[in-house]
Amino acid sequence: MQIHLSRPDITDNEIEAVCEVLRSPNLSLGPKLPEFEAAFADYIGTKRAVAVNSGTSGLFMCMTALGIKPGDEVITTPFTFIASATAVMMAGAAPVFVDIDPASLNIDPAKIESAITENTKAVLPVEIFGNPAGFDKVCRVAQQHNLPVVEDSCEALGSALNGKKVGTFGTMSVFGFYPNKQITTGEGGMILTDDDSLADICLSLRNQGRSKGDNWLTHERLGYNFRISDINCALGITQLSRIDQIKSKRRQVAEWYRQMLADDERIIVPAEQQGCDMSWFVFVVRLADRFTQEQRDRVLQEMIKRGIQVGNYFPPVHLQPVMVRRYGYKKGDFPITENVCKSTIALPFYNNLSKDQVTTVSAALKDVLDNI
Ligand SMILES: Cc1ncc(COP(=O)(O)O)c(C=O)c1O
Image (cartoon, rainbow, N blue to C red; front, side):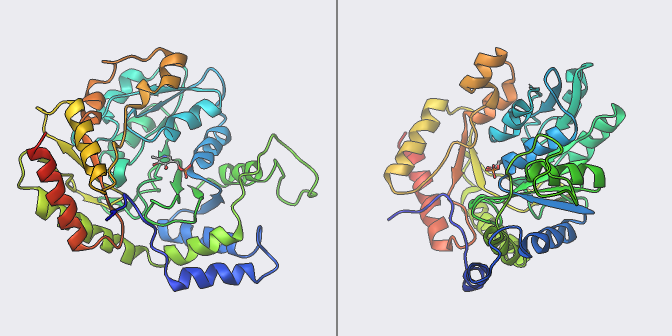
């Protein structure tokens, strides 16, 4: 028996939509690209959307479009997937980490101000695991200092805070569509903004530095091939049309886990915070403080031995070898992040995970904890 950490949810409609593109003459830069962008902008409620080939390239393009360059600093969180920070580095700038709020696991808005220097050019907060808590406060601090916010919403499609959708908080925001995400395009991402000039720069960066109306072989700026094919876009359009259903399926799985695990004092289960409408990305539990990192690691190994895929989402970004080598970050720099990271266990989580599977995973976790 294997229970996977994540699995895509692909129906016959998705397969038919992809096949339709395969039968057409336009595998890339065809009609599905603007259709996906329009549907996405409409769902989130922004003026513009630019579809790209990954969340990572989307974040990098935001940095470039905002003019972020070597010598600049961008404030972000050390509790995230590495790409939030490496996108800053790709633009030649330095990520400056600020510790997290232990309740939301998002960047702590109260700590941002003290990290701002004359070199700070943007704030890049992340809705970790789909949680939008604190984003109103993050934006308020950034606004007071005239700093643009690049919202890393890669994990949070469908979440909202006090009725305001994730993806509308930042000057620019980015979603990701890797297969473990709420919706997938195989690989892909989306940049959103209300600013026409930023969106136009992204269109150009995506397509080899070409500008609107230019001759195909005129290249105005240093550009890239960050295009997403119509095959991927067709998949994205169909997935997006089911987002409400997807969100409620994931909510149900999260609810089953909560029912089965919340009464065990060894396990801290994630909760939806006040004002948050959470679109669940993953279900990450934490072990109580008395457990060591070594014990957590043994739990992960034991679960995997039993055929249940689990993960340590995430190790601290500031302690990744590349960050230590380049910037000299060290253990103890961000104690709240480090304390959370030593205790996390991402459990299997996807749309069609059954109640029986959730029961199996929950029972296995309790049994493993009984024996470590
Ligand atoms: C928070 C966060 N930022 C950025 C990314 C990068 O997205 P992608 O894998 O599409 O490049 C991911 C997804 O993996 C993510 O979870």
